[in-house]
Image (cartoon, rainbow, N blue to C red; front, side, top):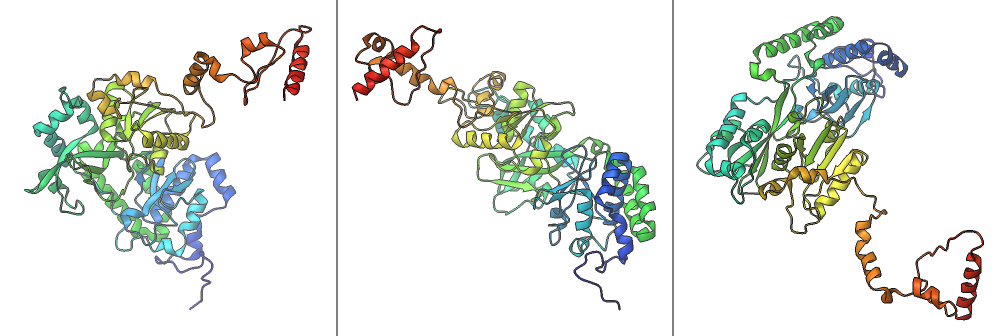
Length: 484
């Protein structure tokens, strides 16, 4: 019957029966957290496992090796479970950032925000933990790739060497996992993946581009530390944690051999073959962030190519050998998830469509990623009617490796190179009479050489001591004053 202070988040009633004293065991002062990081990395890892276990979260692997995707303590309340996992948490430092609301801070801040009433309401009550993220059956992905090979017209358009065909190698398409599905244009979204594989009488062919991410990481795989969760929280919620461990163990026992790979497909992008405006995603929402071609870049890769479209990434990787990924949300948008995935690369080649819009987007993306490590690739070069993208350049027989070697860093808006001034200089040299300035009446020999003083130009007269520089300049000053 004790009335609690609603303004104090530490004294609000807890839906799981935890008292204020037991809840505060998940938090510590800032200095204490810093001591954990500096003295014992295992202690921080244990703290993260303990807290995520007590809040019954099932963290996903992020696009960085030491990163988890967890619930955002600020914007997850009120969202469906598939959208609540939007915060990226570092297992090395405990720092987090949400790609939805952009809230960020330390591990202590995450715990403090998560102990508030709104976040507690997002913790499942009927299950021990959140269900695992959406998983595509390997047989489904294989069927989609088989569909592509079986469709002679589209497969020839992608792999053929005739005029208008893209000249993509079959093994590279298979490496990226490109497939073919059949979509009914009358449906607002794809609810059945198997229907995408089999199609219907009114379905149209669509290219399917898988987006991949890390399947797991050492943090999620740490079975020994899962036991630590149960031990550390047994006094608080022994039954709930034990049930969670049983469910996770059952999941791990049921995983097939093919699912043990390092990467997993987290989303499919479906694009109409002859219908450019047809574009859908499965699942609709990105429950776990991923990139097309993310699995191509090995752990030792230092360079990566960023393209506008999926087929451009396939073409660039095929011809240059540099891992290539494509932008996930439209040809000119770089979300925070993708930015974080590209942080580990020393050099990023930004290879977008070579038109005005693509050029401006490439400059913007390079500034976001860091101009010191970005190179902009121009497919057309100095050819006005050249190919606009990497895949078109490959289809026309251009050497993509040569194009990549011509990549240039981002130029400052106020700094011009000689190519921008070449025509102006050429005009002045070939038309000296048209650019004459104010001439001296008393020094006709000087006029023959310098063609007068032109407005907006600075003329510097140099020479050894005693050669007459001051005398000449004084005479010219008097001459111009007399002539008005």
